[in-house]
Structure formats: C-alpha cells, structure tokens
Amino acid sequence: MIKNLMHDPIFLAGKSEAATKEDLQIAQDLIDTLITHRDSCVGMAANMIGVKKRIIAFLDESGRTPTYTVMLNPEIIKKDGAYSTEESCLSLLGGPRPCKRHKSIKVKYQTLEFHTRIKTYTGWTAQIIQHEIDHCGGILI
Image (cartoon, rainbow, N blue to C red; front, side, top):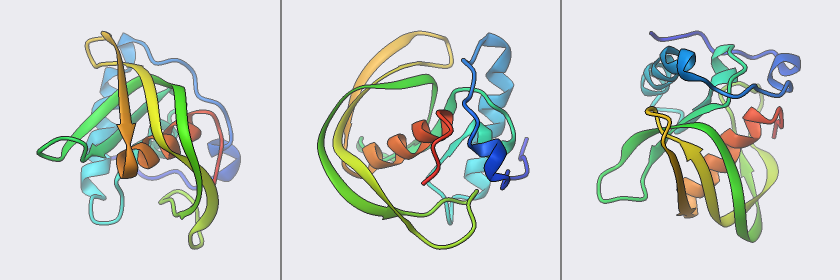
C-alpha cells in the first residue's frame, strides 16, 4: 500500500527498532511507496512512511539489471574511501545538504525471508544505502 511521506524532523530523528517477521507488510508498503516516487527518489527507510523499524528499500543498480531491494536490520560493518558530497531527501524540505559518505561499504542485513547476508556495495548504490541506514539511526542530512 502506498503511504504518505513523513516530514516531521523530530519523528525522523528518532532511532528505529529492529524489524521482525510481523513487519513484512511494512517492507511491502515501503517498496510500493518508493516505486510511486521513482521519478524523484531512489531509496527510502521505514521511518519515511511513519514507521520506526529498521527496514530500507532502494534501487540497486549494482547488477546487470536495476532492481528494487529491501534490507531488514541493515548495518554497515566496513567502509572505505570517505568523501564529501551533497544529498537531498524527500522527507526533508529544502535543497541538497552536505554530508560524508564512503565509496565502498560492506553491509550485513536480513532478507525478507530473514536470511542473513553480507554484501559489498560501491559507488552510487553504496551512497543510497548509507543515506537510508542513517535514517534508521535517526541521522538526518
């Protein structure tokens, strides 16, 4: 189901709780909402649709064909190549804001079947994932 976007910075600054099997509908809502905003958005965290759960969805362009990916309880376990950039966010009003990102990240997460995976991402996809994981921690750009 497509959800309304959350714009309250106090809500967005709160840390999210671990996702459980009871939260799979939230993951589907997140994908539905992301796809609806695909013209202006490449990633979302559950708090952006008003739910404080550690769930992110993003356009993964790291393979041959771009696909939408969902990660439950993601955490960055390694990062390399810090750089400064600017990002915007659908949940935050105003233009791009400065932030620091890493060119390469290794992420530990769970799939929708709750299988634990570890994968390395680079470039644009890594930047998207870092932005969404920050949302889970209540970090706003």
